[in-house]
Every structure is written in structure tokens, then in C-alpha cells.
Amino acid sequence: GAGVSQTPSNKVTEKGKYVELRCDPISGHTALYWYRQSLGQGPEFLIYFQGTGAADDSGLPNDRFFAVRPEGSVSTLKIQRTERGDSAVYLCASSKQGLETQYFGPGTRLLVL
Amino acid sequence: EDQVTQSPEALRLQEGESSSLNCSYTVSGLRGLFWYRQDPGKGPEFLFTLYSAGEEKEKERLKATLTKKESFLHITAPKPEDSATYLCAVDDSGAGSYQLTFGKGTKLSVIP
Image 1 (cartoon, each protein chain N blue to C red):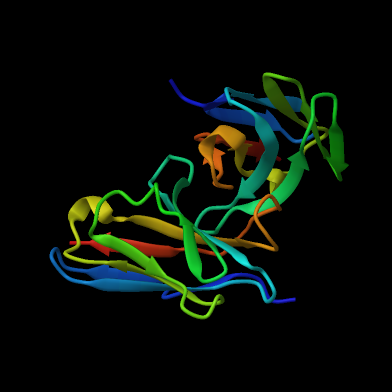
Image 2: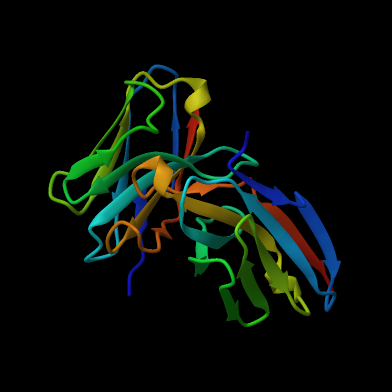
């Protein structure tokens, strides 16, 4: 079956601009997660959705980052006033429920110039 | 203090030369320990989940084991296609939600 998909695969933007990153989870998966991975590091947790609500957003680094999942399926990660330090790979994962194996998408590579 | 520490950072093996990767962890309560494989430019690919000390799981040339403080990923007679970064992650009940905490990974290179 289809896995987790993420668009765009690459995004180049300028400092100060707004970006949106999209995640389409595996069909039927109610839990969705966003992670950020910098070069040479493991993924770092950003936010966890159970259904439509953000059950845990403790990993969001500041209020420039926001994520939504309005219908309990597709999720969008939004970054305002991008900074060069936001450059990283943004990974999305989904699972049937919490406490189940998380399956990752291919990631969106964000470069802020 | 890092919650998940992987060693070595990089490992170079000859084809057929068996070895082990280590993942040591510190948690309040372990809900699960996960191994993923990551190829360059790709997302992590799930390999194993281990839930309790003494548990073992196998898949082809890979075998994962778990103790109360660490996990090992044993690679038997590796092939060049096993070259990748192997990531270990824990689901800690003390973290509240089901977020995973990852180590930095071990980069494995298998030379023909």
C-alpha cells in the first residue's frame, strides 16, 4: 500500500519568508508526527497529532512554527519568518494509533538562504 | 545528558565480516525501543520494535536484542547493500506522548 508522502521534496526560500510543508499519512493512521533532522543528527520531535488535535506540541522550537490537521488526515507544518537556522529535513511519520510503530515519509529538505 | 547514545558513530566492515551496533538509553519507563535504517536522502525505514528486556527479533542478516540499559543490532555476514545509517529510538513513558527520542545513528559502510 501507499506509504507516507510529503510535498514538496525540496524547498528553497529566503530568510523572512513563510513556508508550508505538507504530509499525507498512511490511510487509516490516526496518529501523525512531525520531526526535524539536521545533518549528522537523529530526528528531533516537533509535534504529535491524534486525530485532528495536537496532543503534544512540546517540541515546536518557538511560535514561528505551527501545524494543523483539520480533517484528521493530511497535515501542514507552517513556518513563519523563516531563519537560516530552520534549514533541515522535516520528516513526517504516522502510526495506526499512539504506541504503535511510526512509519516515516521521505522528508522535505528546507533550505533558507 | 543524552537519553539515547549510539556507538560507534561510524563502522567500516568488509563484506562478510559480522559485527554489532550499540544503543544505550536512559528512560523513565520504556514503552518501546525502535531500530530504523536510513539511506542518504531518504526517510527512516522501520526495522524492529523491542518492548522488554530479553526480547530478540530477526530479519534476514539483522538481529536486534534488548537489555534494561541497551540494545544491540547484530549484523551477520553483511553485504554492501546493508550500507546505511542505523538509527535507534526510544518511546519513553516519562515524555508524556508517544514521541520518539533518537540517537545520532551509526553510519555503516560495507566494503565488497
